[in-house]
Length: 240
Image 1 (tube, helix red, strand yellow):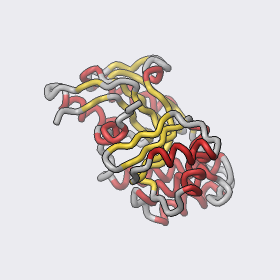
Image 2 (cartoon, one colour):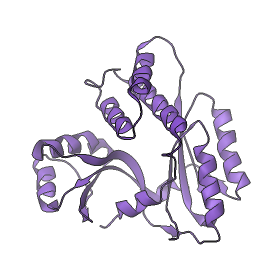
Image 3 (cartoon, rainbow, N blue to C red):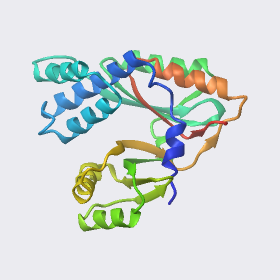
């Protein structure tokens, strides 16, 4: 099927260096997942997976622990998910996922990003139609046939298994994420997952010209500077 997951990852927005933003993002996500389920990683697979991801991104333990402890307490903020879709510089398609305690503030901030870069905010569903929401598990390996067999033996419903540049990537429906991960680690103990997430992958890509690149990068940076923005997905392929 050739989803070119590695290429897609290389073109994603640059937030890794913004530590305070990264810590805030994970703190909010961990709080919401713990608050919405059981605030115990051992009993909450979604929370456990999110904490593992935060640790891989070098989020300090005190940030993680504070978010979980906060979820154990009474009261606290009520965050709700909000998704915005539209077209950015160069005609690239964007999905912007947020967690918000004030919808008016969030839509105002996101709309401002679109407006100030000549982008167009679209209606709900106008862009997500052209993306596939998938669980993605990626790790170093060469024997994709053995991985496929392990998934089939565990009765995991998968979309594709891709082998490229020394990595194997499993694509599955979001509902199969934990089942696929469990089956993989049971079949291949000691496997270190480079990627384990539920994400949006574009069905087609859009090449961004050198002329559009500065505005494209400005748009992405503006989105990532919004406190309520958690994830940004796009179908752009950047020059160079």
